[in-house]
Length: 75
Image 1 (cartoon, one colour):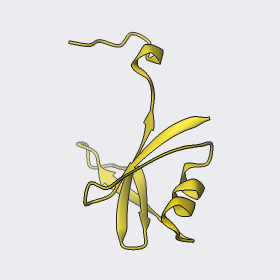
Image 2 (cartoon, rainbow, N blue to C red; image 1 turned 180 degrees about the horizontal axis):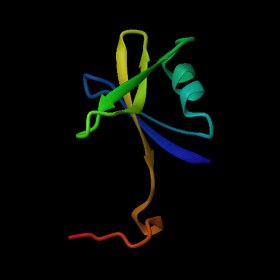
Image 3 (tube, rainbow, N blue to C red; image 1 turned 135 degrees about the vertical axis):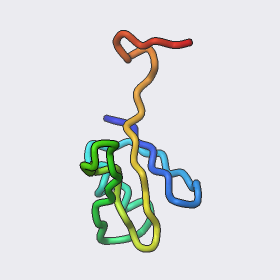
């Protein structure tokens, strides 16, 4: 099971384990629908970074333990 971190525009955090991050986020915040949230890249293209749920914008991150990251450079 993967672990996820969702942070809304106010800094509120939701941490959860799931194989279906969108569905589980909706269940955790008590909503039934979500729209994709995008952020611009430096080259002008857009990338999907999370979901808009109700009145909140969630950036969603996959949490990976440092020990599992290959070739991790820590300074």
